[in-house]
Length: 223
Image: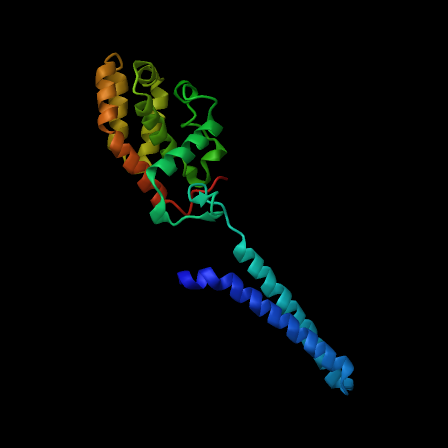
């Protein structure tokens, strides 16, 4: 199947050229030969049909060579989408950083305005990007690992943390979401406890983000 996909554009191109050549040959036979009457008309019709078929096949060849740039899989260097098995967390994280920059003007804004709980159309069909944004918000705090950033979570409105919980629940990760709500409501003043929990779960969030993209790869296009 992979080999067929690889050579399909070439096969279609050759088939299109053959159809066009056949159309030319039939046209020559129709007007340069001794064909008359009904036979000549049938040859002309056949030439037109082959001409149309050749054009259609070559158009299909052009479509198959056009790469749909997947938000996570497209590689600018090769101009192609990589295989899902080649995707890494670093690639996912980098692309989500770009996604977040489109959603908010700064990292602080996502913790001061309930963007993750909004009805923003950029979350895509069925809000497919929302759980990823929730993981990304949490993971970015571990990237900085400083009291200033832990305080963003500790001082965040309860509604924002609740929206994160809802988003994580959409990925069957309600336990993590419930723990975040508990930390915010009962341990907001304990920065050390908050930081320890996030840092202990840093690898888990990396794993979840990568798994999520792999599981929803066919839905994760920018819309």
